[in-house]
Every structure is written in C-alpha cells, then in structure tokens.
Image (cartoon, rainbow, N blue to C red; front, side, top):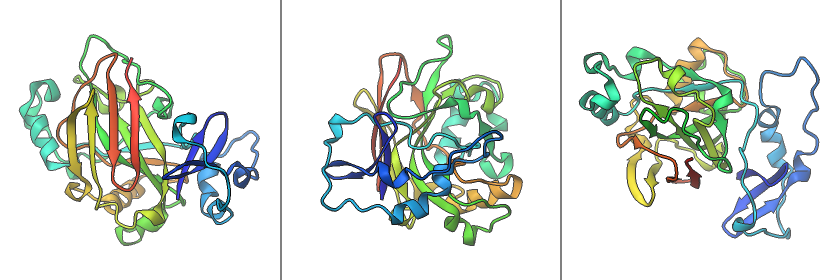
Amino acid sequence: MKICRYDEGKFGVVTPEGVVDVSSAFADLPRSSYPYPAHDVMIAGLAEIVTRIDISGKPVIPMDQVQLRLPLCNPGKLVAAPVNYARHLEEVRDQADLNHGNAAHMKQIREIGLFLKATSSLIGPDAPVVIGDGQRRNDHEIELAVVIGKTCKNVSSADALAHVAAYAIGLDMTVRGPEDRSFRKSLDSYSVIGPWLVTADEIPDPGALGFELTVNGVVRQKAHTRDLVLGVAELIEMASSWYTLHPGDILFTGTPEGVGEVKAGDTMVARMDGIGTMEVTVR
C-alpha cells in the first residue's frame, strides 16, 4: 500500500487514479505529552492502521489536486550509508571536486561505517531544496530510503527485513568539501523523503529496484539496487549493531555513480521501481 500525507494533515492511499482520503484510519494515533517518545508514533502503529483501511467505493482525488507532504514527521535519527556502490567509489576517487585531495583515502562502506544526518534537514516533496552554501558545489544523490518499523538491536541480516515498515525515495543532498559528511549533509532541506511510503509487503526484494534521477530533463543517475555493496538487510544488521533502531528511523542506503551539481532554478525528478516518481525544485 502506498501511504501519503497531503494538504493540511490528511492521510491518503495512492492509487493509479489518484489519492483516496483515509485520514479516519489514522485518527486514533496516540496524543503524547512531555517527555515525548523518541520515535515516530505513526510508523509504530502503521502495520495495525493498514489493516483498518478500506478504499472501496471512496472518491479519488486526482494527483494534480493534492499537495504531497513529508510522509513521516518524527524520525529519531537519519542513518546514512557512504560509498555503497562500487562505481560511485570509483568516480569519487577519480574526481578532485569529490575527493578534495583525499583520493587515496577513499574507502568503501565496510571500512568506514555509517554516519548520521540531522533530523532538522528533513523535508518532503512539497518543499524545495535550498542551497546552503552558494560558494561551493552542491550535489544531488538519489537513494533508496528504508523506514524502520520495529525497535531492534543487534538484528541479523536474515531477520532484518522483518523490521522494515516501508520504503521511499531519498535524496541525500551534499555540499562538497573536506569536512565530515555529517556536517556537509545536514543543512536544512538536505534530506528529502517522498513522494509517499510504500509498505514493505509491496517490495519483497529491495535489491531488485531500478531507479534514476534527472535534472532539468537530463538523466544524471541511473542504476539498480542489486549493485549495492551492502544490501538493505546487511545495512540494518550493521546499523543495529551500533545503534538501537526505532520505528520511524530512516536508513539512506547510498547513492550510485553520476552525482552532480544542482543550482537554484533546477528541477530534480527522482524515479524508483515499485515506489513512484518525486519532483523536487532547487532554490
């Protein structure tokens, strides 16, 4: 099932014809008080909520009449996988604009581990990416995004996918420079998730998804998740061996070759098999 948030606080199911309002199924989400939970309560309850959704006979709103919002609002953390496609490692080593004189030290994910991004960098498809440092190169990086659905620690790769609630398209925007990744990738609006959530049952094999990103109609990145160095299950195993993962935590799985600069006025269109298409502007 494809679950979106749209307009002002509404929830919908995305169909080929448009969006069906299912906000009533989400009406009983728990209301919290301080100290607030360190996870996303909507994602924690999503599996049960989905069982209550029935769209038969309900009116469909054309997609061009809704404004899609960030599909989940309160992830506890954004975990990201650097250099998780072999060809991306090659392009980083080959391009001075990407390696900043450290080509010999660029390593794959197994050697350098994961990194965290600030949750304040998160936006949905309704918001633009706002260039944070106009004096430097700012790049797009399309990725499969994985939303954790169950609390887990030290989960094995064999059991990892059972802890996934949903998948989405992710854009891991990046300011190029010599500083730590977390610093350069955590600017406001530099983590884009959308256009909606696709529940895990619709994607039994996250390693079988083709995807691409265009900028102003020109293809920049085109790849397949089968080429991940560490697949989704292995990434969850690695992440949960260091951190407790909670419902709503988002795992950015890494970007392939073809990363490139974007500037104000550009339009990025990201497409992924089994998920859909997301258009994001740059200003």
